[in-house]
Length: 383
Ligand SMILES: *Cc1c(COP(=O)(O)O)cnc(C)c1O
Image (cartoon, rainbow, N blue to C red):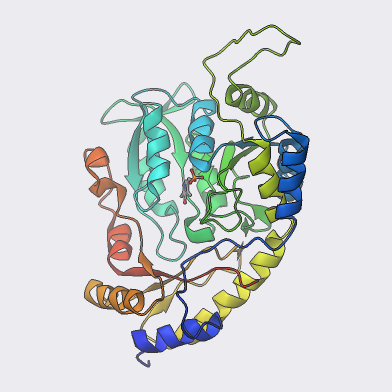
């Protein structure tokens, strides 16, 4: 095993991006396709808001690309998660089992409903929900009337929300099987994993509903935007209905039959999304090369690079390494950021935030270890 230094890593990243001096961001968007053309079409047509042909084209593209029967465009990934949880039947005071190692949006969406997150550990290889940890949690539950109840609290486990961390697929078929066995609806937080497949099937398609994000820092962006995918006819139609203020279709009457949301993705954002989606495979091809270059660079060193399993085709959204200790991680973060190369630790674990400090968890040994030592590296597509 050789030792690698932060200085060598900075030099390697500068070569990777052909940037001897300029600042290198963690993940920057690029607009080198039909973005300007489609945006001009929007403006010329005056259809910039919540109806328009690009919304339909965005949704059609996502149906075709993922193979899902329904794709509903919404304002952002957080809204996609919120609506998905509601459609899955989650209610106030019920439990939703998820990861403590995730972006805050997962827990926020659960909280909008008034439900309570409970945290299971992540897998050391995939950084997604650990199948073993989920199984251990389910062993503290019982099944009554085709529903899952947590024995100690008597609360229903209303959904399971695994997250495909940094674009690496969680062991999602096994997780889906467990959820089915315990009558727990599966909602995938696929915000980071657009284009990622597990055993040839797109993330977001293993459970009842899946949520994608098109935020500016994701693999492709619509400025702001999200997609809900599902194969369920009722949920697919209801997702569209609830995201558009639950208005009953009529030529002029304003009648609404539910408390709905103004979550519809505007035409102008959908235009941007479509232009970006046209290039997604090219982005992933280049990101794949970046990931294998990182993998080679860190091979045989004591800094562990997160490579993907044979079963997973990753979108390689954000590359990550694990340093030996938290102190070494901090030195690395300081050096790289001081030298114009942006690197970041993983999010603070959810159970350590004041809003979720009271939530149940299983001790989270892997999450805690990873949170101490992980660093994300620059991973932008190179145009
Ligand atoms: C980005 C992200 C979201 C939220 O998406 P927005 O479009 O920013 O609302 C949700 N979950 C995870 C894990 C994310 O990374």
